[in-house]
Length: 152
Image 1: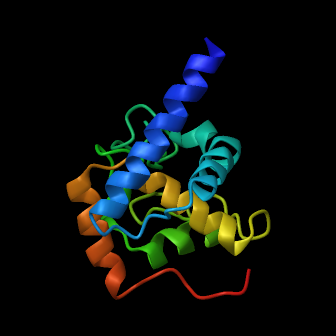
Image 2: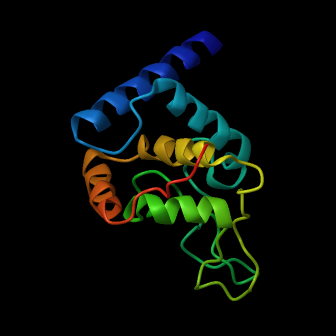
Image 3: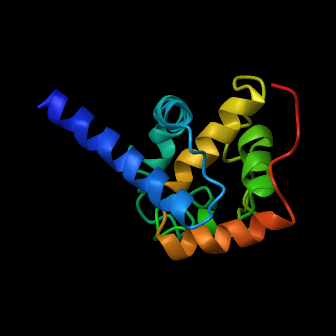
């Protein structure tokens, strides 16, 4: 069963990467980077955003603390609407949704835990969760706001 899951996951990553490349998406063509991005996502992000990027239940409604729960990263969410620069910044610096009634960061900053290349790998992995149309839209958003240039 584990082997079947591994093969299915690998096939999905390779298929998504190939499809993204064919459509001119900025997703990495390096399969090992996508696998690294998925691994980092599972370690740091999945506890809030879900193992498959499904987000928390009722993510569009404020909880008892007046905060919006973690959104999904798949097609039903809104991650794909943001540029590479914005997604990088959110992962690196954390995020407080402007609609939240609290002042705290509801998503922690990961710039002290992840290298710049690892943050880019996570963002590129997220792109594999989107539809082709969403990847095209996100690529257009990123034309004027690409990943920051930093040394590895």
